[in-house]
Amino acid sequence: MEDQIQSQLSSFGARLRELRLKCGWTLEELACRSSLSKAFLSRLESGDRQASIAAALTLSRIFNVSLASLFESGVGSAPCVIARGADAVEKSINGLKYVPLSNAGCFFNLQPIKVTVPVSRRGDEHYHHDGEEWIYVLSGALTLSLAGKTYDLTPGDAAHFDSRLPHRLIANGKKDAEVLLVASPVGNSSQMMLPANSQHRAIPAIRLLDLKPQNEMAGFAKPRQTKINFKKIKLKPKNRKELS
Image 1 (cartoon, one colour):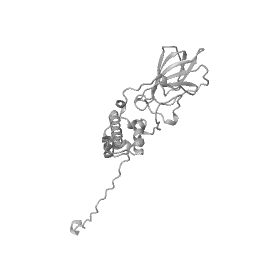
Image 2: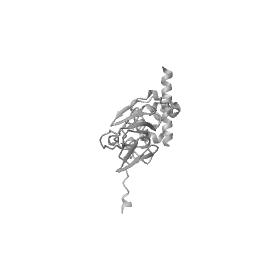
Image 3: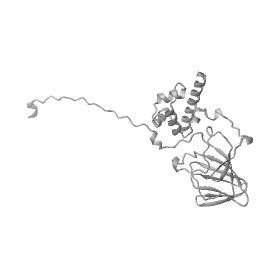
Image 4: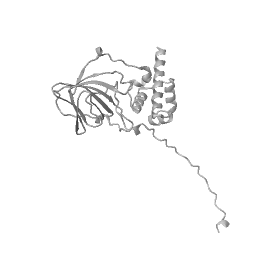
């Protein structure tokens, strides 16, 4: 049991250090962003200290990763994730049918999905969320409605777009359209993160735990206020001759 706990602590520490270095932050910078002390973070990374739930939640929010992924040592712990076709389970939501092609949402950022867009799909609701999407038409005729414009796609065509823009997939013709969709929820560093309550997804993000992004400044520690006491100096009265 103790070996398992130590292994988990080491995994958490390695993952924390990996994420910190990936962001290019020093321990001091992470301490400032998280309001956790540098000494505490150092002990977490070395595996000498166990993180509380509050600390783990804070760190997962700052690095914008799932809570579960903090306890894995990154890609190295899962170099290859196999998704067997026999194990695939089709799901339905918002008029779409989809099959996740990977269950490694806590290790990787790309989310590959096979989507079926039925011809009978109703409505004209558009969706928007952080990141970017790439779609490839496998069969059928598809129209991508994106930010007020439409793009007609046929088998073999692909589209790559900023998923913060309002978008919707529409099947044309007499049969359903099959699409290979790859989503990258985080997107590039130049993108501004949308608050969780302003995101509107057709298909939920494949994450073990989605945490509500908060203003990055909320993670900064407040500067310490130091009170300086000045000693009172009693001045001796000057000689009367000096005053004249």
